[in-house]
Length: 214
Image (cartoon, rainbow, N blue to C red; front, side, top):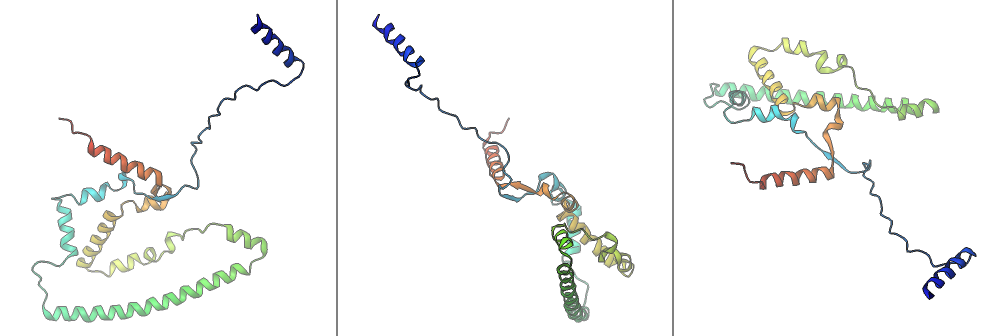
């Protein structure tokens, strides 16, 4: 038939090297790269498992919470006299004056030490200079920290009431920052991608909309 002859003629022409009509190209599906983007914005994040101590401590009716409030805030029926308060204000003013003087002195010492450090780094040979700039700072050993060196001396000079107040302060800091040692050891746990924060807010909103099971 005429249709068959036309098909044979087209096959013969293609076999002779003559151009034929190109086939319809298929649409290429772009593959989405689901790999993590290292340049994606990170935001601070506090995992829920690290705030259990804080949440449990501030629950209603906790006797430890009431005891801590008694230490932090003034008592309802104070027993100090006007002379005691006047003496306190004098000692407080003297402490602030001496504290400001020592703070200024230490700040000047830190500035001089910082200038000497940068001067020593700039005076290094070229190979050592690049190594020093690229290196990561190392933490100060615990035995050289101020609070570790003089902790026993300060604690031994306190009376019982001052030790009680100091212990209350330690307890309060632990309640407020129970995860501080974990954050110092593994700070990456406390950062999360901004996209995950949005998705978690959506999950919380959806969880509130779900009807409660009877």
